Length: 230
Length: 189
Image 1 (cartoon, rainbow over the protein chains, first blue to last red):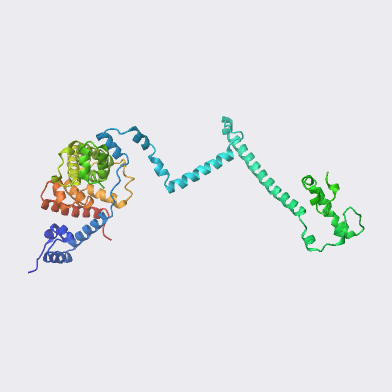
Image 2 (cartoon, one colour):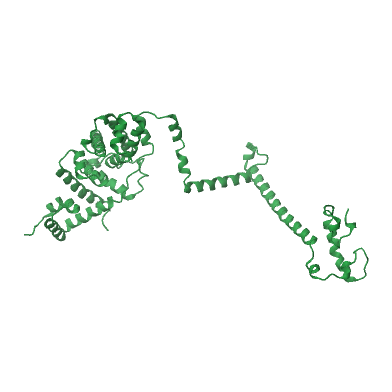
């Protein structure tokens, strides 16, 4: 004989149904009732949803100082070393990658800004905190940085020019050894072609004058005479 | 991990680190039970401290025949929660007309709870608000069963009531909590 449950019985046995401890006949009666009763069907749905949601709730973390507070109130204050170490608990947080990278970036930014705006001499006075002084200091720092950059580039150009003029010319390297090149450049020549070649020699002499004192004369290129050395 | 029984024996011999381990191991359980029941972070913190002070003083009276240590700990916590509820009843009765419903202190306090920020989980907060609207008997039954995950016999030992009463309270508590949450908009999709 089939059971015929009403709302009161269905509500009373709801947890047993959810726990799966009803007999097959009871479970069938429960299902039959909820199938025909909108209120009990909604109750079953809501409670089932509640239990599924409760499973997702994580336990709360107690305050970090609570354990120490309990221990202090039971076994008394612990050793001074433990208390001293507690002051540095935040170090563990700082070393986390998400905070460590941010802290390093901020520290680097502060260092750069301080370096750019710091007055020369290293001593900071109240006058240095004046906005006008800060602007002048920043302006001076910018110009110095720019001048250093220009000098650096110019130095690179000078080095390149010296090397290009001291080294063998590509045309001379490829050309066969000829009589005019074998002749001493001190000998006058009426050939206009040779005159045109003398122009870079004079330029080379002018640039390399300061360097000739450091070069062995036996290693000098053919186009440079002893008159170049001062 | 050293069993609780061995730690207790060490504690009774005056072993401080053993007591420290016992406290660290069970603080979260006690704090969660207190917080879910009171809905107030400060009260939960004070009650947790009070629980462990009482445990420390009465540890010598604990017998394994009473049940597992967590069950005994939960029983002590529950007794203190009942005392706390009775102590604060007068305050609740003299509050506004809103307290005609079985709410507990701090639930709708204008000042934010210290642990409010920790309740990042919206579901956890909604559950807390729903629990606050249950009667203490139903609330503790639901907390012990569904949040502390004690079985019926452990809850019977904690509440000192027959197992049938335990089941009945859990059943009614769940239905009432589901109805409250549904009114708050937390309902099945």
